Length: 340
Ligand code: GLY
Image (cartoon, rainbow, N blue to C red):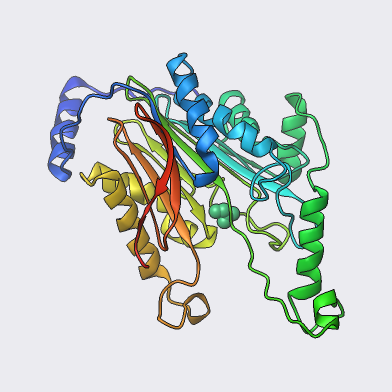
């Protein structure tokens, strides 16, 4: 099957184009003039780097990964790469996905240990294999083949946070926190941070990348939305790019990023497309353990979107922010929110 090219006659191309045009309304696009990028709020520097790289001629998907690199390397960001919070066993495992609009190719890694730049490994999967997703030991072996260096990703800060979680998350085991011994209970809020960068260059070509250490203290083996194509990241070069951060399980069951791109394809503005996908997340959230006392989702999800013509937007279930870089420069601004 590899290398097989499907031939399309001019007539069948015209027929399918006309039929396709009848199926959805694609609004007229204003011409893209300047590369743009959108990201989660931890990506202020990432969007600046991504746009600078696109101005130098770097393809959007590579520019997005170069933007993410300093965040993956930053020990202070406990949601991504080096310094990310570990799983329930204290092991840091990373997930990432990249997608290139021009070629329609994608690469991803999941449950990758000991390599701090999973988005770069995902790029190698995209460019050097006929696969899309490598996981666990296979992903680690593949990364080492490509010269990535193994290192301990658990920082002292992340190890202390993990120990605090071990000691305080249940009253029915033998782990006891100093606070409990002093009769002060603590409630531990588990983090679902991530970085997504969506990038569109001056030609309107699109690329996206998402990288995360996943849900803090997850069950070992748990994989979130970030490395799953159509969930944490998706690109359609005729339409744009979308990605997500927040509770991965909610984004997986709705195929969130794919939905956002689909809504843009139907003619919605990027922010409206994000809001529509969030309404789908709400619609799919039925289990009472996932709802607050007002019947709303008891978790956060963010979507980010850039259209091929450079229009961009973001929205979240609850008030949140996003980073963006346009001709006007870098900024971190409020996203639209479905609920107060
Ligand atoms: N959105 C990141 C995760 O759930 O793993």
